Length: 189
Image 1 (cartoon, rainbow, N blue to C red):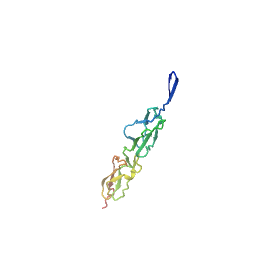
Image 2 (cartoon, rainbow, N blue to C red):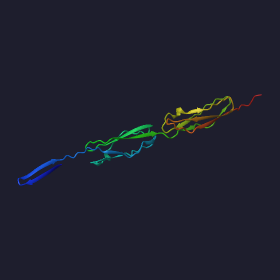
Image 3 (cartoon, rainbow, N blue to C red):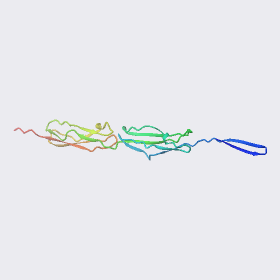
Image 4 (cartoon, one colour):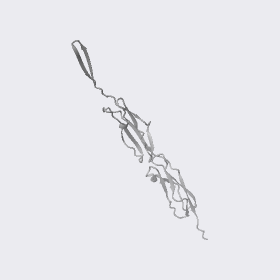
């Protein structure tokens, strides 16, 4: 801006021009719309609530915010998103970060194939198996633990227990299978 000053006396008019340069040296301020870390269930939906940006000269710069980083809701882990903005005078705000934790809080589910099993005494017991489902842990079936034993040479009921924890330490409800070892052969006299 040019500001002109003039003064007049009996000898004439004197004029002085002063140039005023208005500069913006203040960076904009970013304010998060979240508070604390964000948690998203695996395979859920992450909604970025974003941030606001205000600048002393330009006002609202929220539409100019640039976010870097991504969140993969299909993979457990911690993801960092960074938000930044600069004003028209190239003053950059102090970046802010948001940590998004993709978590698994749902327990796996074990389902027995078939139900209880009956085996003849001195026969062969073959476990019909199980299926296990978990929202995020693709290897959960490899961690299923079966406890209990079956002695096919001694008639009685045996109970086998199946249990598992997923990679996030969520425990399935334990399931049980009863194996009936029975003597179906008549004695010979």
